[in-house]
Length: 366
Image (cartoon, rainbow, N blue to C red):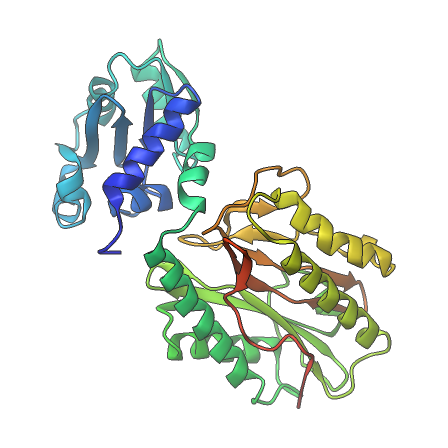
């Protein structure tokens, strides 16, 4: 992130805040703080507070024992650092930095105890969520961010290409999950973040945790996996069949495949995010499996696996070039099998580009 335009990001955050009537933003350790000033300490009972105001430079309030970490980060040159020692009141420092502000937006990751202490220090101010502001700042990715997301997606694709060459039958879901985690790191990820392996009936649970279930011939297996690479995340899902798939699977798989393609083709600048969800859902409803599609069609991705924009009914926010999100329709039949196909896509000036390039055709494994 050495090429990140952090002053520009801070400026956009303040512009967005001003448009909605906020006079200041307070962020605690979170991807939001990392995005703006490049400092993301572990959240603890000792508060770290970033104060942003349109009429003053950024102020970063840090525990004294963590000041060297802040000094060594991009925040050291972007913000005025104010350190506090154990026994001192960090919220008095925050109140001083926020003096005169009557409407303050606070990051969604703030601990309740810290927000309550901040409210007590500023009893005349009103508080609200900075989530919508930061969502607008972060949802449109810069070139360096898009490059990182492309590398992460390519590494996940390489992981899938390798895992389908391994044996599934007679091994547990945990065995395959460990293969996925190992391959993600082997292909460049810093770490695996999640490895969902749902075999047979377990595939009908979209967030199934892999366990000791032994994969058998005839099982459909949902593989949903991703991890962190250069600070950004991958997330892809493919469903494979161990030998001959179960009855009814081929028709349902073709339906999910068509729904995923329909959603992808609906993506273009200016389209409300909910229209992408509608495109996938209408296809599955028409195929007779509407009740079996139990989740939204997608979520944004970047510094977090799940972030804005959310591709779901009710989200009327228009898509913009540079937004990145998943398209992952699914069909889940309890007691039988599940199917999900997921790619990360980027909104372009002319439509959309898939960041995941691995085949969406059904892969048969042994």
